Length: 140
Ligand SMILES: [Zn+2]
Image 1 (cartoon, rainbow, N blue to C red):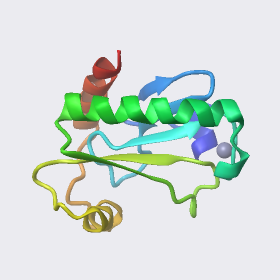
Image 2 (image 1 turned 90 degrees about the horizontal axis):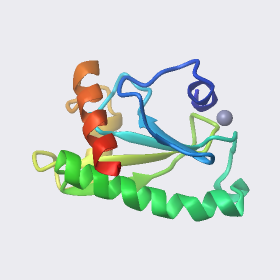
Image 3 (image 1 turned 135 degrees about the vertical axis):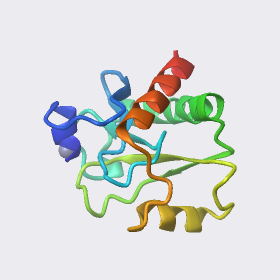
Image 4 (image 1 turned 180 degrees about the vertical axis):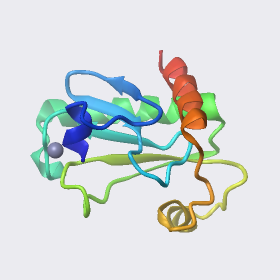
């Protein structure tokens, strides 16, 4: 799935937020789409964090820092969660998840709601594209 997106075989509703030689950032390729929910993944196929090159690892921190700032400025996120599980998609990826004022102030509860079947924070493709545009503008 991550490789399909990198190769252009899948397209995120909000489009690509950012990319450079090492990393790509886009909206989640998921029906449980939250506006502004970002996925950060290496351009290269990498299955484990330990397999990142030193250049990939060195670029990751500044990129995540910029994304968190952009989500705060562009979408008024109160908190930004960053996590990586890698259980279902065998390509390293990080979730960059804004927590808004109207969401529970409990990280585990927010994760349960985001990844649960009810998807109370889901938004449509148009809203996702609008959120993506704001985040791209905040990054530039
Ligand atoms: Zn891959």
